[in-house]
Amino acid sequence: MIGKYALGSLTIGAVSVGMAIGPPDPPLTFNRSAPAAIARLAARERIVEGTGLGSLTLDGARLDEGAVRIRIARAGDAKTVRCRVAVHAVSPETSRAEVDCSQARAGDAMMEVGTQALTLIVREHVAATLEDRPYDVDRVADRMIALVVASRPAIAGELATQGQ
Image (cartoon, rainbow, N blue to C red; front, side, top):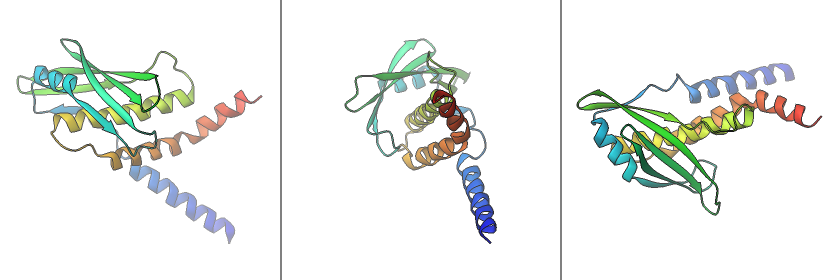
């Protein structure tokens, strides 16, 4: 009987994770010219709360003709993370954005999960900014929870090898 409950719980958990993760994120495409998108992202600052990472300040700065740097700073922490958002023209009135939050120290499972979580945060910042809509923190938080749950085995394995 206990086995049936455990199997049922596992199945419900797997379905929940699958629903939260959903299909891969589509490319970020906007009805805005690439120069206008870059200018808007470079000028935008936002405070994000509710992701489980504390109060985050996101702000942009132009890197070059085709990219913006989004800086993420947590309240009370001097360290920052920088993500690069490349913006490409699809047509004169349409652009596509690619977010890259990979950091120099990569390779371990925990860093990869952190990079993916920051990418979710910045993708939503880019989408909300260029679509002139509020930041959807609930969607980001749901996706982050699903990410952590899906990554749990890799993180546990890494922690186990570090403890030896």
